Image (cartoon, rainbow, N blue to C red):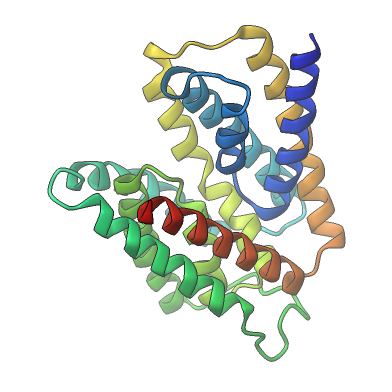
Length: 252
C-alpha cells in the first residue's frame, strides 16, 4: 500500500510537469518506475506508454478548451507522425543506430540553443497561426521527425515542440498543439505491447487517474500562469539535459 501511494504521488507530480510542457509523461516516468524494480519491456514500457497517452490527451483537452491548439497544424501532424513512425522502424535494419543517436544529440543541442536565443517580442502575445507555406514546412518537418522517432523508439514530442516554435508559434501554443499530436502515437504503441504486457491492475488503474488529474492541472497552470519565454527556457534546459544524458550513454 505504501508503494502504491508513493508511486501515485510521483506520477501526479511528473504528470503535472508533462502537462505544462505539452508532452506525455513517459519521458520521465520510464526511468522513475525503473527505480522501483519493475521489469522494463513487459511492465514499464506498456505502462508508461498508456500514461503517456492519457497525460497528453488530458492536457490537450484543457488546451483545446482554452483555444490554444492550432487544429489546422495539429491534426495533420497527428496523422503524419503516426504514419511515419513505422517507416523509421523499417529503416532501423539498414542504418547504424549509434550514428543516428549522435545525430539526435546534435539536433537536441541545436534546438536548445535556438530556443535560448531571445527574439524580439518573444512571448508578448500568443501566436496561434502561421502562414500556409510555413505550415507545409511544418508538415515536412513533422514527417521527418516521425520517421526519426520511429527509428530511435522515442516519442516525437521533444523534437516537434521546439520545431513548432522555430516555425513561428509562441512556446505556449507550440506546447498546446504538441500535446494533441503525441496522443495517437502513444496509444498505438501501447496497443502493440498489449499482448505481452504484464501489468498490475491496481497500479495501472490508480496511476491512470492520477496522471490524468496531474496533466489537467499542469496544463491549466501553464495556460494561465506561464509565459512563453519561461516555457522556452525550461524546455531548452530539458533538451540540453537529455542531450548530455544520451551523449554520456553513447560514450560509456
